[in-house]
Image 1 (cartoon, helix red, strand yellow):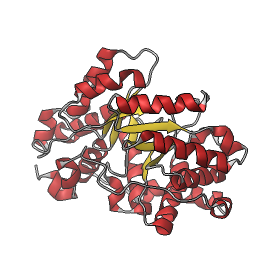
Image 2 (tube, rainbow, N blue to C red; image 1 turned 90 degrees about the vertical axis):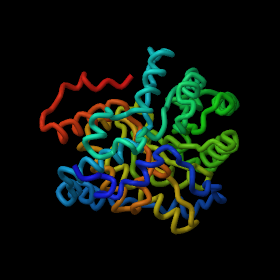
Image 3 (tube, rainbow, N blue to C red; image 1 turned 135 degrees about the vertical axis):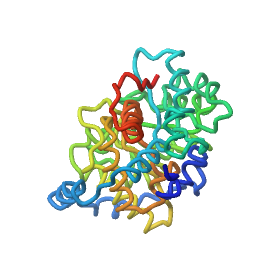
Image 4 (cartoon, one colour; image 1 turned 45 degrees about the vertical axis):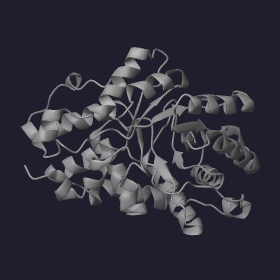
Length: 337
């Protein structure tokens, strides 16, 4: 089979999928309330844009396999359950090192590319376990923090939690904002909170989880995205995965437009991470198409695009096996952790 990296331009991610963090940090800017309050969302136009996406963009066969392999390199392989154990986290880390079976990679011409997931995401309790299990792999550990998922613990405790995860070796911190600040329009409080989180992270990159399902309106999503970027977020992320509504293409469109506007204003590139409810390979393709259409090719790399998921990887591997063999296998043949 023809080498998929050559066919699809997937070489960069395949050679150094977890290298990451090669672009300038988002140092933020002063809060510009005029710019924030000026944000509006044309709901009907946005709905039409995402509704027409599947019909206008499609890939098949080798091209589809290449896009799915690219998605693998952008996954933050995640376990955030109350029954997590040390052994489960170790198994998850082993899967992150070898996310797709070697025989499938060999058949696709990608056997020597060293493909891994973008990161492993866990609670603080398991950061040191994951760091040890991933030693030498180059795969960063991301820790959810600041009272995940509700974010309602005291502010000083949030900062201590961030500092503890960084001390244990986390290179990325996924924080949750206080939704009340958005719902009451207290943009200064949100900005100040995010600035404190950014400072507590030090050299670790910070992803701001907006919990978009709790923010009620797309206008709130747009404004919260902009404020978090002004305060120094390196990524903006849709959801904790624990809300009633998590990542959607509609919310994604709004957040990507804010990333584009911020880059045009400041010259700084901010990453994007959809999370929660993305479990099918066909769904992640639509997110990739939207990313490329709205922001360009650079936002298909793990430096600027992450996917918060676990079961998604199993379905991608299953689809790749179908591409190679022509037969679908049972999902339980592709364990995650």
